[in-house]
Image (cartoon, rainbow, N blue to C red):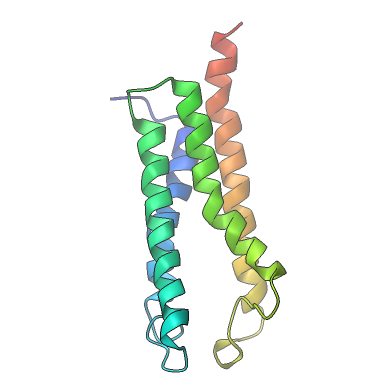
Length: 140
């Protein structure tokens, strides 16, 4: 069993949140059970939930697999764990998109999701920097 450093813990935490977070927030009347959503919108919601699951699982596998070079695994796992959060924040750049549909919005809600995206990316960055120190120190 490998030691759990603070850096690996943070990366693991973000990857697990990518796996379960969308099910917590999307498996309800505002998303997948929203009667106002056409079937194709629900298709893309389901696709996004599954994408988060696969990215998070692959990040965990890369981070904790004993089969490959540790520093390579750390870099790939960190990159994979960031994709969900980068694409979620980047989706705001597309025309007609919003973090929350108007009928479900309440004051301060839209910025809160963007804050979650930023927090996840900051945790990943800190986790990566802390975990990568062992490889850069070993190289000296």
